[in-house]
Image (cartoon, rainbow, N blue to C red; front, side, top):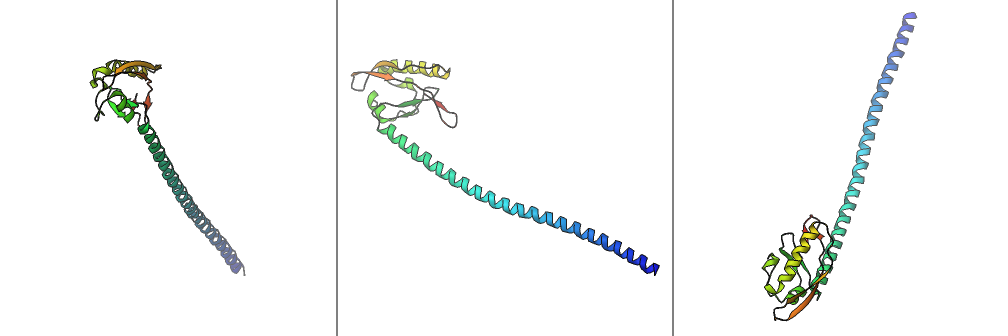
Length: 173
């Protein structure tokens, strides 16, 4: 009976170890399942967030294009002369109003401001001074210059210079 009793105790201890091992396995499996569930939920949330971000980016890009088109139309239809010049004095944009004011025909984009006709010489010199002062961070007050148009008539121009910078850091006046 003692032997049987010892075996029974031994069997209970073995069963206790087996139960403990099985609980450890269940705990590990539960942890793995919890991690997988978390990854699945996280992936779902990420995909929803990514989709929402893509939609927002597409909407903002469309708004920016619409705004750019609107501003381009305003500049193109303006009777005011608008011209942009880079730091080297090269003309980067010019609207039809400026073409009409200075009386130049043809494309002058990429040409240096100093290449323009003699009737614009005073304006060119003043503009070079503006570029230098603006590049130093100084403020430039509007000024007036007398210039001739293509027809030979004298015109007084009020010139305002500002520093522009695009998203890529390119600077213009």
